[in-house]
Structure formats: structure tokens, C-alpha cells
Amino acid sequence: QNTHYVLAFDFGASSGRAILGALKDGKIEMKEIHRFSNDPVIVNGTMYWDTLRQFFEIKQGIVKAKKYGTIDSMGIDTWGVDFGLIDEHGALLENAVHYRDERTRGMDRKVFTKIPKSELYNITGNEFNYFNTIFQLNALKENRPWMLERANKFLFTPDLFNYFLTGEKKAEYTMATTSSLLDIRKREWSEEVIERIGLKKELFPELIASGSIVGPLKKEICEELGVNSMKVIAVASHDTQSASAAVPTQEKDFIFISCGTWSLYGTELDEPVIGEKSLEMNVSNEGGYGGKINFLKNLTGLWMVQESRRQWIREGNEYSFGELETQAKEVELFQNFVDANAEEFVPSGNMPRRIREYCKQTGQTVPETPGEIVCCINQSLAMKYRRELDKIQYCLNKKYDTIHMIGGGIQSKLLCQMTANATGCRVAAGPVEATAFGNIAVQMIALGQIKDIKEAREIIERSEATCYYEPQNTEEWSQAYARYCQVTKRQEEEL
Ligand code: LRH
Image (cartoon, rainbow, N blue to C red; front, side, top):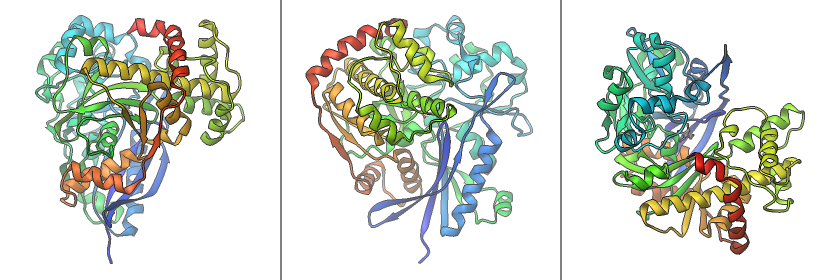
């Protein structure tokens, strides 16, 4: 019997995947059919994404998918904030620039002279992160204005691929809300912000809701790849929002941490929460599936472990994540902490060295071995999760007793257990493949195979078992938390 599939593309900061999804016996079955590396390329001092290579990999995924059966639709999710510019003839002006590129350094201050921080927050509800689209666009405006003059349309990464695939230029809602260019209450582009930054509003395409059908796959692509046409669906194209669509709960009020390179930590609301507290705590209001708002914090996640591991490989020692975790478990706890969001940990490069320097400067025991480094990172992340939980609870005047942890990072049992210990909350971990589940489920809703997000979450809950972690040694962790706060005071003050 011919199975019907949907095809999800999930791009992460270092690799991408194509995954087929099908509904079977009330569960979503997934199969990874293509995996590829996604390497940024530095040229003349600018860090670019290899946009055309990424598109090539999408085509490869489509070709590989066709042998499995009928593909009804495809959908793409990626990291937030980044974009490409298209000229009036529809050509990409240059490769998309990576959000870690240095062009945004100091741009926040420049933007705040055009529109004060509190005013900007009041309109967009977005937290301030060095990489926000607004800072990237302002960098162009100040340093390479001709790029904006030549640009006819601005397209976020997934929208850019959707355009290449269909010819339609649209902006999907969840992704657009990572830009600091939207009026989040109205869920529309903010003409005010756009004008005050000095951008033309025609640059920004029509907004569409997550789950909209962008169009059929172009005829010429079908011919090139030898496939039948399929619907291209704008899923919740911000990966964080595909993941949050997959939190396996029926509760209306829940808190989650989506763990990957980043940790996205928040809760789903019907309307944005914008006020003095949330501005002071720098909490974001980002769009979620179904016009929802995710009240969340963008925190560094396993980036520091990933980047340390790359350094050890460069030095000739390749450890798997599992091996690193085993070594980290042997290390005595609480010897050292870092603030994972400190500026010095943003760039790629020698991470262990920077961690050692941080510990030296703050008068702590310096971690030497890979196990010590990974233990330091994990316990620091867990402490960070506690602090940020306090902030979210403070802004919302609520208390949570369970944290849903989702995404690849939950394969670290150590991190899940430490999170439970540090926060005193029960951790419900799963699914690992949250982003892919969310991407697939939103396509299935759009195709009418699943009724709504509630049913999608029930199906996802059945599709992968959840692991629970109960808090342990909370007294010890609370005492150590005071030390964590002391050590990371500088970054908190910089906020
Ligand atoms: C996580 C993420 C996050 C931010 C960052 C740039 O992958 O999408 O939400 O937007 O990437």
C-alpha cells in the first residue's frame, strides 16, 4: 500500500536533516532520510551561511524522499533571525550572513539612538540579543547601505527557501517575530520601527500564518528532480516554535526548555506580556504556532559543549557526547561556574581556553580535563535555568513545578538531572526530536490529517516516551546557587 508522507527539513546551526513523517496507528512515525553538515564560511572577515549549498541539500532530500512513496508536502524550519535579500529580478544579492558575525557588535546602542530601548520593547516585545534581525539590518544600513538600496525583498532563511521552491515571497509569522520589527500586539510589521531604522517598508513581504500553504513546488524543480509536485507549507518555520508546538502536554499552562545549541526557555501565552518587569528581565515575546505568544528567554545551550568538543577534535582527541558525559559525571560538583551567556563565549573557536580564563578571572578552580570542562558547563546551565525560571515566574506571577525539556540536548541525562536539582522542579524530558515532530505535525494539520494542535500534542505524546527526573539534593544545589550568582554577577549587571 502506498504510504503518504510529509517531508520536514530541520536546519540547525551545524547540521541539517530531512525527515519523512507519516501517521500510523495514532502515532507519528519518522524516518531521517538525509543528513548534511551546515558549515558557515568566513570570507574576507564576514561569516556567511552557504545558502546555495543549503538549497542543494534541500533538493537532495527531496530526491531521496521520492523512493519511499507519495510526498504530500514539505516544510522547512531553521534557526531564527537570519535573512537573505532579493533584488528586483528575484536574484539573491549575497549569501545570508551568520548571526554570529561581528557586524552586530555595538549595533544595539546605535539602534537605541534611533528608537529608545523601552519604546522598541514596548512595540515588539522582543528581548535584546546581539543577533536580532534589527541589529543586522542596522549594520547594513550604516556600513553597506547600497545593499539595502539594491534589495527589493527581505526574506528570512526558511522564507527564502520557500521562495526558491515556489516563487512566492512571504514572511511566516513565527520567524518574523524574532526580528524586533513586528508590532507583536497587532502581529503586523511595525511601520514605526521600520521607518525609524530608516528601512523601506516595501522590503518586507506579506506575513502569513504558520501552517499556510505557500504554493506548489515549481514545475521546473519537479522536472529537474524527477518528482511529482507537492505542497510547500510554511510550518512554524522558526525551529524553536516547531519544537514548542511539540511539547507533549494537554495543559494550557506549561513551561519548557528547548535544548540544543541554544536553550529556549518559556511558556505559551495567548497575548504578549510587555511591561517594566519583562523589559528589566529581558524576556521575549515570540510568536508561536496558532498565533500564540511564547514568553521566553534565549539562553546559550549546549553550544559551549559542542564548541569545546570541536576544539578537542582539532587537538586530535575525538570524544563522543556520551563519553564526555561519562567523564563529567566523575567530577566533583560545584567547583566552578560560568555564565553561559557571557560575551566571551559567543564566538566560535577555542572554548575550553575561554572557560579556563573565565574561571581564573573569577577566582575559581580552573577546570582542566574535558570531564571537568563539561561538568562546569552543565552545572552552570542548570543554575542558569534556575535563575531564568525565577525571572519568568516573577514576570508572570506564577509558579511552575514541572519543566518540559525537549530537543537533542535532553540526551544528556546529566543536564536533565542537574536541571531538576537546581530548579527543584520535576523535569519531564521528551521528545528528543521535538522540532521535527512539530514541523511534521503542523504540515499534517495543514493537510487536514490532524485536527488541531491539541490533537497533534496528544499524538506526539504517544509517539515518544517521556522520561522523568525528580529533584535530588536540592539543599546542596541551593547553597551552590548562591555561589553561582556571586560568580556571574558581572553578566547580570550588564543586562
Ligand atoms: C535556536 C534559535 C533561537 C535563536 C537562535 C538564533 O535554534 O532559533 O531561537 O533565534 O536560533
